[in-house]
Image (cartoon, rainbow, N blue to C red; front, side, top):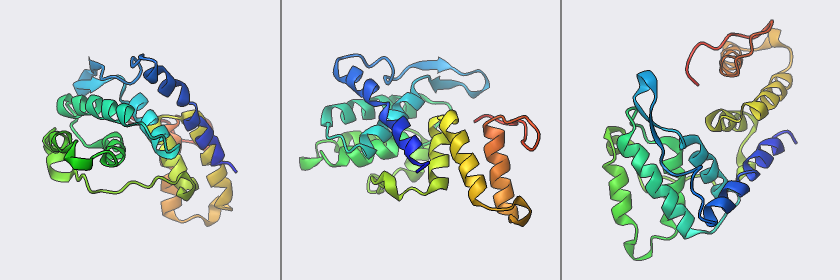
Length: 200
């Protein structure tokens, strides 16, 4: 099944996880930089997101790793010029809740709530996250690839999705817009595709 290609890609994060356990957090620690017009950003945000998905879908039981990643993610939420909540914080909150016996991490959850305006308005420690990778359909997997910047796998999945939609002449406008958006993100410039127009 084509979705398995994404599962395999996420599985490659085991090396990052093992490095973290061995004391090398260089790929997932908060790493601030100035991102041109966007302002303060974190060079390791996507790496942390990928590892969070790995811990979620592989059902890794590791309180220390989750707590560490959560604290690093808080640094980004507190300092990022774009603010936002982000999937990484949501996933890590879901995972950390499992270890919150005796309200051990309530202070961290409150810090997340106070991290920025977006978090104050929309962060909810009670929000659930789906742990079963198998419940993602093909379109879900494409969006996951886009979020984690797995463009190579995304291209394969987009082609499979396109083939599964049948004759393009019979597509509805929503499907056409969806494909145009995917091709723009993937910067598919050849005939029949659109040139990338905006930041991924």
